[in-house]
Each structure stands twice: as C-alpha cells, then as structure tokens.
Length: 451
Ligand code: NAD
Image (cartoon, rainbow, N blue to C red):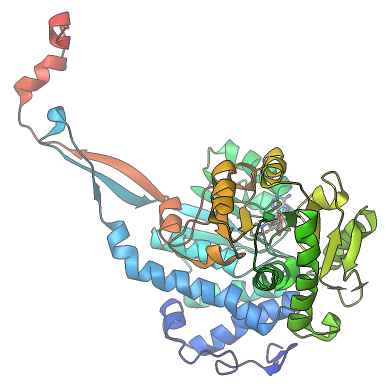
C-alpha cells in the first residue's frame, strides 16, 4: 500500500535525491534501512497528502541532521562537568553528572507526526532513558508504521509504542513516568499537567500559538514575499512555527500584496488546486474549522478563499483589513490562511504582540537592522528569525521550544539531551582536614562565625 505516492509515482532514494542511507542505518541497526526509510517517508504522503519534497525536508532530513549531530557530540555532552570550588571545598572533587531520568513518555501531535515523535526520542535515548511513544491517532498511517517498526529495530525492553486517542492516553497517564514530553494543543496540555501532578512528573510542553510576522521599513518585497509564502504555506500552513499573521503599515501592505500574489503564482501556478506541491488539510474536522474561520472573518479576502471539502483542499488565502478582535485572531490558524493587520508604526506592532501570549516564533522582515533589533529586544518568544520563516528551527545547535503559553522547555541537539537528563550535583569528599570541620560542629559560638 505504500508503493505509490500521491505526488509523483514510486518513491525511491533516488527520486528523493538521497543517495546514501548510511545515517538511517545507525538507528535501524543496519538491517533493511532503505525499506524502512521508504515506508517512513511515505506516511506523511498518506496522512496529510504532503508533497514528497516537504515530507523529506520536514520529517526525515531534520531528524537525520539532529541524529548525526547528537551522535557526533554525545560523548562530550556526557562528560561530567566540573564545578568551581571555594576555600571550604578546595580539596573536593565537585562536578555535575548527567543521568537518565528513567522512563519517559513522548506524546506526539498530528502535524509532522514523525519528526515530533522521533526527534524528542533522539534526545531521550541519548540521555539513556527508556521511552514510550504515543503517536497521534489523527496521523494514523504514521502511528501504525512507527508501532510496527520500533519494536522491530529497537530493544523491546526499552522502547515501546502505545497507540490511541484521548481515552487511551488518559489511561496511559495514570502510570508514573519520570518525564512527560508533550507536543500538542494548549487545551490538552492542561489535562497532561493535571495527570502529571499526581506523580510530580516533570513535563516538557511543546505548544503552539500565534506567531507574528512584522514587515516594516525598507524591505526587498520580492524576496520577503517568497520567503513568507514558503514559510506560511509549507505543509498548507499546518506548522506550529508558521507565520500566523502579518503586521505592517498600509503602504507596506499595498507593496506586499502584489509580491505575495506573484510568489504564490510562481510556487503553485494559476490553479493551486492542481499543483502537486500544495499539501491538503489533515482531516475533515480541521477543514471545517478553517472554513468556519473564513466565514466568520470580517476581513477582506484578497487572495484565494476557494476550498473543496471532499478533497480537504484550501487555497492559499490572504485576508486584509483584519482587526485584533477578528475570528482569525482568536486562535492559532494552523492552516493556509494569512491575515494582514495594519499598524501605524513598529511600536504599535510591538504593543499588539505584547498584548497577546508569548508566541512560539516571531518573525521580522526589514532591511533596517535597527528595526530587527528593536523587535527582538522589546518582545519575547520561543524563537526569533529575521527576514525568513521557520528556518531557525532546522539548526540542531539552537534550542527549540516555547516560552510561557507557547511551551515549557526545549529540545533539538544538546537541548534534547539536557531535557531528558538529570543534572546530579556531586561532591566527592575525602577524609582530610577533619579539624577544619569542627568550625561547623556544635557547640556553636559567635566566634565560630568569625564575627
Ligand atoms: P492535540 O492536543 O489535540 O493532540 C496531541 C496529542 O494528545 C495526541 O497524541 C492526542 O492523541 C493526545 N490527546 C488528545 N486529547 C487528549 C486528552 N484529552 N488527554 C490526553 N491526551 C490527549 O494536538 P494536535 O491537534 O495533535 O496538534 C496541534 C497542536 O499542536 C497545535 O496547537 C500546534 O501548534 C501544536 N504543535 C506544537 C508543536 C511544537 O513543536 N511546539 C509542533 C506541532 C504542533
């Protein structure tokens, strides 16, 4: 059933542009890596009708990058970290030792169902933990394949996959874990926290939110529009770090709109519906949610707006004259709808951002470095990127995670290793200088305090 892709026929390492599958064999213990790879890469094509190229980039490449980065650096991250000492501890060996937490539960979301399940697992395994994976039931093909492959290639004593939806996850959460790593929505995060509180289990939350994009001052409109369109409509906008809305002056908007139209035409052609490079909406429920947003908005649809329920299709859509209290601003869009809000100044854009919850990502497009610096300094967000979108999260040397309502904790590269490690404070003391210790033993006297 996985042999034929919706977009472009048979999937092979060659058609994917991947000559060597060596890195993948590191996790699959050398056996049948190419079959595994082909199966894995096909899941997003089935679950979300994701274009092959986008699936390779977002589900596999990013995973392999993190994996190889972790393998190359793990021995140095694992080294005990020596701690400075003072006069009273001069003779002691003081260091921080990274230890596994124990059994960790990783709960994944439906968008990027492989990456968001297996990339945290890289950190968890690197730190020496046993892992239980709970894939999203929405991306069922990925979930079922992960459930089939993990026990085939990884030790069944240490790694397990449990499938199911809300009810099964709640049942799973009755168990005591040493850490819970959750990617998903804010509403579900609350019930995860509630369950975790019963066992005092530490939790990492990778949530979403509305990631703003400020376009201000002199901007190379052609390049800005192409980068924005790519970041927003990649995976049909179903990315937690997709630019959620644009803030710009009305004169910038008037320059940006034709550039956005041009970029959309260049990427997806005259009729995006027939373009194999545009993803579909993951489920009928999400399609209905997005359609309802378009019906409720008081803004003006200037690009796109077409949709087809049967095909779960929604055209890349741009809406202008959107106000802060519009339906499009009430929740994270997570779909191919891009609202543009007009502001008078960069200060007004910053004030609007700061009235909302701290976002997962924040973008600013400007040729003025002072504008970029001002936005960076006067706002807070999980990640920040100027003059592009999404790409900051592809770097394993940068922590990926939110702040406040967009998430707690981070991962990728060393940050994943740290998230799943306990930093044990160690002091190895010998037997010397016992006479010196009498200074702290009773009977006490003010003289012993040195006053
Ligand atoms: P979701 O919260 O509906 O589901 C996430 C997981 O929780 C799934 O595995 C699901 O089975 C489970 N779940 C659902 N209801 C549950 C319940 N009542 N009790 C226990 N478990 C339950 O989220 P989703 O719709 O899969 O994902 C979309 C959300 O995830 C968006 O808000 C998006 O921004 C966010 N997201 C964040 C990141 C990130 O890295 N920060 C990445 C992708 C998605």
